[in-house]
Every structure is written in structure tokens, then in C-alpha cells.
Length: 614
Image (cartoon, rainbow, N blue to C red):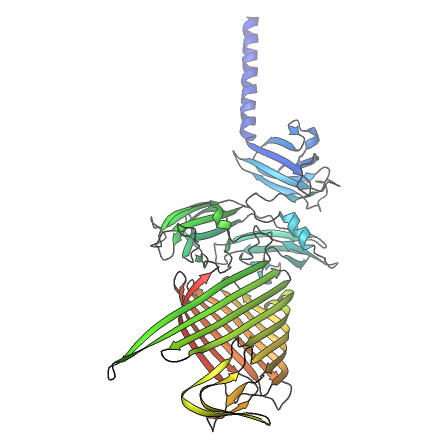
């Protein structure tokens, strides 16, 4: 009887123990692996503590499953804060890493500590990022604050500079528009809310309760996902094709995106999206299409680089995470250089039915375009060189130079501040432009003429000539300089608008340059040199209404200090419509008037342009 009671006791004991173990196992169903590094990302053995959801403190010194720089924890689901040792008691200490554990989840967290005082600096950026972790980003920016201000930093995952802007909402309802990720935004101490990416309801990423304290930078935890989509063909050439993004399962539509124009030095857009499952479809397909689509899962705090392959009929034939997606996302490349040669050729044969004679005309046009950019905040420099030459050879006539122009445009900008009043960016600019001719310039006649050239007191007579030289090579030479304020009104993937104002100077050198007399067509007189100084205003925009159309405008005017001189201005509009790869329709309109000109000159050029980009 006694043995029976003993057996029942042990049976009840083991049952209770098993029940308790089972309950404990159900609660402790999450895994957390913590690895520790110093600020140079070397592994270090450092002690830390974990603040649990119920307010308890767990320390690494008392934890049995700690192996030098790595420790393994079995914990219930919930939110945990990881501090340096003995630092969780300080309620004003925001140097911690927040980890959210969900049922059945195992997380591997890599934490950066200050090796000198064991203070947590942040997390190691995921291996998917193309730039250093947020701590290094903040240290690189090296902000200095006034006594009553701090700052926030939304870290970037690439150096593309094409992430969407974000809004900052104040407690009093005020909103700061169009802030830039990867830059420190200085604010008064307080609580703020931000919204990143798409601003339509139900889209974008919202983060609340961001606390800014005086003298410190609050690094916002990157809970969003970053996505880069590159479009290529089967031979890995980049394609400027359009796609649409939908979030599943709701099929919430985001804006359209495009690939890149092959070789144009552009950068792929970085989408900022909430984590989740997305469907990418070919533009203008139905959202629920079962063709020309791909799906991708985006994870919180990670960058995903996706490649979509099109066939010759512009249909999806494949997609995935390929290295080529980052082909234009390179680190530490402050210089971007674009080089291209454009050209077209015409062979025209005309037959006279009356005389039964035929004539052949050959026209060749070549353009060289070199565009170099340097960007490193707060500096921007751009140099654009354009050489435009056109030759015509008619049967039984000289080779004729029908177009000859060399233009070099240099502009440098130092950014002073962002979001000045209602403006996106304010800076100081300096520009230097050069315009001239490369070859000797001639005027041809259909009949022999006696030409009289007058240069001051010097006169030259050319008898029975069929052409006359009106300027030597490299002349006329025009130089332009300017300095003042540059206002960037708006800058997005498809729009860039700048307004400039300041002091402008121009000099035109007309060495041995002649112009025809308006009354006597055989009389040519020299054009004097000219100089002008005054206030200058400029308006520039770059527009891309849709993937195949690009519109560029630049208007410059100098209002002279000397009232006896007339204003000088030039206005150029260029419209380019891509037809197929390396072939586009290009239209250029130029209106120009210099101080010595009585009337403005107009020029319209429409050409089918073939491109060789290298």
C-alpha cells in the first residue's frame, strides 16, 4: 500500500513537472543571437543587459549561453531593449537596440559598442546595404548643434541619392516638406512624426514618437524596405522600360518607375516601401495579370536589388536578385562622366528632267557630347562640352561647312542650406561658359564677285572670287562669367528646376571677323569686340514627362549696368524623343541676342539622331 502511494506521488510529480515544462516551452519559443563588435566592426567581448517587456533585467554576465563575442538566448515573444551593462536604469539613455521577437522567430542581432565605455552605438548594417551602417553615416556627417537643438538622421542603404523625400510633422501641426534621407535634419528638442516615400493615404512608411534631444542625433531605426529595380535585355544592356508596383494582397498601386537609358550616367531609383509582398508588372498591364509580372518579398531594414529581363518584344522573360542590379550603384564615386557621339548622314541625288543631268549632295553631321559631374555634399560641379560640326559637299562645289560650334559650360555650386523658407535648396553658384568656332568660316557665292573688306583704315579688295573668308579659326570667341545665388526649386527623378541670380559678365572677341553690309552685299566690315557687365538672371529646368521624352530649357539674360548698352540674352530649348535604342528624334530651338546685335537670331534644328555612347 505504501509503495502504491509512493508510485502515485512520483507520477503526480512528474506530470506536474511535465506540464510546467510544457507551459514554459510554449512561452520561451523565440531565439535571440547577439554578436558584439566595436566601432570598427571588430568582434569584442563586452558585457550588456537586456530589458524585458515586463521590466526585468537580464545580464550577459549571468548568462550561461555566452561564448565570448556571441550569446544565445531563449525568450518569450515581445519587445526587448539591449543596453550596455548597468545603463538600462538611466531613463534618459536612448543608446539601446530595440529587438522585436515574434512567435517561432529567431533573430541574429549584431551590435556595435563603444570599446571605451561599453555604450551601445547601434547595429551593424545588413549585408544587403551598399553604404556603411547608420553609426558611421552619422560620424561621417559630424554635425555640430546649438545649445537648444538636436537632429534626426534617416539612414540610407545606397549612395544613389534617389530615395523619396520625407515629411516631418511637429506636435503643433507644422510640417517640414521634402527632407532628404542620409542628411541630418536639425530640430528643436521635442517629439516628431515622419512619413517616408509615397504620400498618398495607405502608402509610405510612418514612424511616430521620434524624440529629439539637445546636442544629440537621433538615428531613426530603418524599419522600411529599400528596393532597386533594373531593367535589362538578354545581353545585359540596360533598357528604359516602364513598370508599375503593386502591394499584395490589396493590389495598392504605387507610382510608375523606369529603367535607365543605356550609358547616360543616370542612377536607378531607390524605392522606400513598407515591408511585404509586392507585384511588379509591365506598364499598362492589368493589376491582376498573369503575364509580364514578377513578385518579390521585401524585408524590414534591408535593401533588395531586383533585375527584370525583357525580350525583343518587350515582354518579361525572367527576374530575380542578380548582381547586375547594382551596376550603377557604386560607392565612393563622386565623379560621373557621360560620353557620346551623335551623327547622321544624307546622300541626295537630284535629276533635272529638262537637261537630263543629275547632281549628288552629301551631308554629314557629327556631334560630340561630354558631360562630367562631381557631387559631394555640399559641393556640385558640372562641365558640359559640345562640339557640333556639319559638312555638305555638292557636286562640282567646294566642301562646305554648314555648321560649326564649340561650347563649354562649367558650373559650380556650394549648397548653403536646405528648405530655406519655401525653397528646397539655397546655394552660391559660379559659372564660366565658352563659345566659339573651330574652323575658318567662309561665305560662298553662286557667281563671281568683287568683294571689298574694310577694317578701320585698312581696306582689302578681292576680285572675281566665289568665296570669302569672314572669320579665322577659334573666332568669334565669347566668354561668359557669373556669380550669385542658386535656388533649387524642385528636384525629383523626373524634374529639376533651378533659378539663379547675381552678377554677370561677358566678353566677345571678334579677331578678323567680318559682317556683310545690309545695303551693299559686296561690302564687309569688321565687328568690334564687346564687353558687358550687369545683373544676370537664369532659369534652368530638366523635365522627363515620361520614359522616352526629355525636355531641357536654359534661359540667361544680362541686364547691363551701363544704360547705353542693351541687354544680352540667350534661350535654348532641347526636346529629345527616343524612338528605338540609339536612335532618337531631336529638336533644338535657340534664340540669341548680344549687345551689338540689332535683332535677335533664331535657330531651329530638327534631326534624326544616331547615338554611340561609350
